Amino acid sequence: MRAPALALALLVLAVVLSPPATAEDWGAVGKVNKLIAVKSSPELVPGDTGRFEFYFNSTYSGPMINVTLTAGIYRYATIEESVPVDSSWPYAYPKIAETGTRTWSWTAARVDNGTSRVLNFTIVTAVDSRDMPHGSIFSQSSYFVRFSVIFEGNVSGTLTAFHLASRGYFTDAQWNLATSANATNPCAPPGCRGDVNLTVLGVDGIVPDSAFGVKEPIPRWPFYLLIALAAFFLVLAFLFWVEENPGSYPRIEAWWARTRGRLARTTAPLRRRRPPKS
Image 1: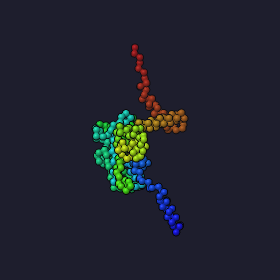
Image 2: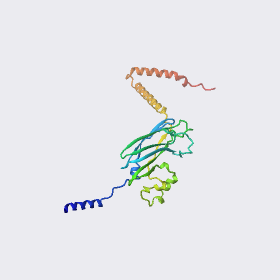
Image 3: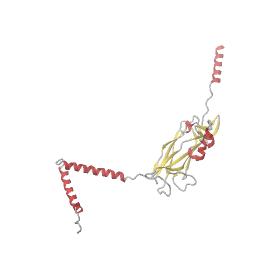
Image 4: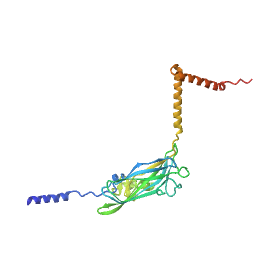
């Protein structure tokens, strides 16, 4: 009887001393910043449409329930300026084609661990700069895209709502306040993640922003002109070599001599000097 009693005592002791199972940390930076990964971001010519593709990854050990993912264009920026694309934006473009607005939402009943979905939306631009500002040949410009993820996760047997958002959902004043020393020192998770006070921002995590470009293309004619000039000077170099090495290519040498003679006769009147005035 002593052996079974001893084994039972050891089993109870192991259960008591073993650490409890770690609960899911739905705001962990290493999981939140990998939820969205851009697959391809278009570089568009004004007037063109392009597809923005990205992965929506489930990085949690538990399922994400009632997920709503929103993407929207929120800012236009060049080296000289940065303008918000919001209700005061005076242009009709750029826009997301599927909805005709600047946001698009996807809803899924359940996103299980380890799944990865490729999502996309089509960006529509305008040709005329009066309908949409864009970059030029010598000026880079970008339109920034923001993301928001709302879902429910299991916390100790209770479904709890979580909201993740990217930098584009906050004003400069809100972001500066959330990253200030007064708001982050001291501050511990889940109220703070890194150097950002999430409680001040009213979210549970920060997902990454993205961007796409719209600019006038570099014209092709200078490229073709350089090719033509290179070919022309290459031919001239060959003809001069033939001239300096008589007998190497008799036919080409004869043709070049006739051509030079015609050119000389054609340009002769231009070389004649006018008689001086008396």
